[in-house]
Length: 411
Image (cartoon, rainbow, N blue to C red; front, side, top):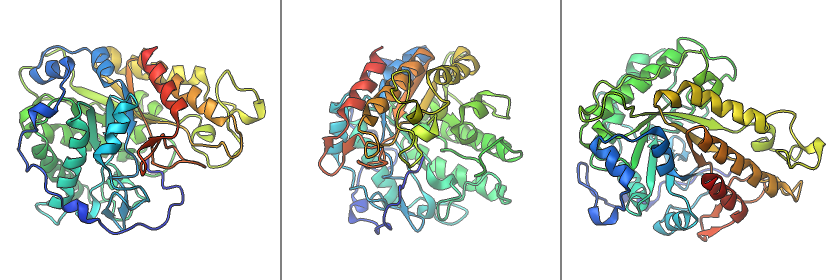
């Protein structure tokens, strides 16, 4: 998701992007990484069940609207009114009880021309530095390619229904190759995710050949990362279906799990190292629609006129069971890479109670059906914001929702 919420125009790139961090192919500092037993199992090829992988991820949080933000197609972490990411902010997220952080990343005009498609070195350095803020604190980290496939973003290019697919696929391969080499020495607490919410921009039934191109992107991603070597030969790789939509991923609409032919021979043949990515914002009139009409959710709702007519607990259960039946039982862990609901307390002072109920239900239901969860935080607090923290003051703003997430993980 990209939630700009009517923000002001973006700022230029900060000088902080020029901070120098370890160069490509440099091993991360061993003393800083609090590697878990499960991560060590994953790195060495020892059997790790989907349930154990999900348990190791624990409570997850998104650093949204930062490294995927952009101004006129140039990614800049302050472009959408969030402050520069700091170690102190990541430390606050960890202290709040989160074990994993998903860092959405855009590349866009920081990618050079063909045939090399070189990523701007200062931008790649900054991505690595922010990853290190979390990785060196022992957190699990997901990084992806976020806004490059959005038709609504200037200079987006990973467009599944564009005519120049040969050039798009060559560019995609080169960009992921560079990312793979940069992070090849990080252990399996780092997960790479191929893309985000890629589709043709039209909500509804998936179209062909657009879905075939999404499948092709996922296959290029898996093959490219595996071939960069190091821990990339065994780490978990995360891929989405059509617009990270559960029905269009788990149903018979064309999604194909990529083959994993270049992975390390040390991985047991019956063990999967591909994870499936979906998002959950249902019902949208509660979770994301920017008005004050639907403000309550779940069986605890007290005002029927403020509760959506769909998308309640039974729907949530059915959606996660779809993913379980299609993927988890076959050994593919599922990641709900985004979920959450916006602040509508301006219209209903009880709204935060239902936001917490929603968060706990998504987390606990996902856990029951073998999926890890990452709350979408866009850094916005107050009306229509998803924020759990004030990033400028590094303080918690929604302790009740955080408590609900932790309770859901513990359930």
